[in-house]
Length: 271
Image 1 (cartoon, rainbow, N blue to C red):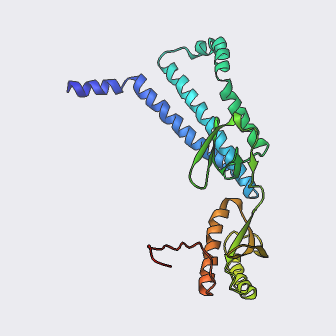
Image 2: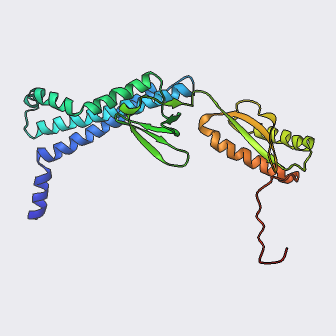
Image 3: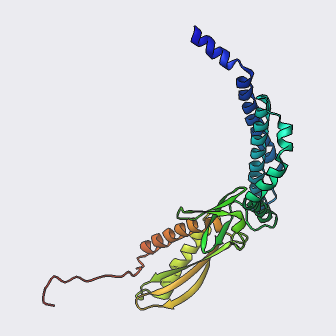
């Protein structure tokens, strides 16, 4: 009984249940505030505008979260009897020192705002930074994350993003060389390629009619027949894999050989 009474007395103190209520209210305000931000900002006329607004939502949500944390902290201190007004007033000199200590963080924040406002890139864009090419998967107050198609993630401080190539502002033009055996007549191969192009055109995301560009090279053991197609930057690798599958299936169906290197092995026999 004494233990239960002690527990009830502990949780019945204003400092305990009051702190729990403050944290709970803070989380509720953050949750509904984030929903409101998304409702107001998330709409857009086209894909680029939607991605840009989505990036702004993430950035503002990050700012809003830190504001909530600060308010929760100040309210909790006030609950425990700390004079927060006097505390804030005394932070004048300390704030200046803190500002110097956090100048890199401030630069990151300002750079993040500049990147969005000047349309450097938004979340979902494909960019190249120092020869690292990938999709922008996250953008916060301090850092931007870029993910390669192979899975590696590059984390960059926003202040260090001074030069970046955005390749998502226009569709990707993908060129594929199809190595084909010399034994096949050109008109036979081109007939199969026409069937391949028709199938490629049915792939979701293809922007324009795929093109047959002709023979691009006469190599030692094969002829290169070249095709091209236009698709969104972010899906070009997936679409290219689908196109290669279509090529292989049609070549197999029409008995067209794709040359490959072969090695002859002799087991100490007279040849």
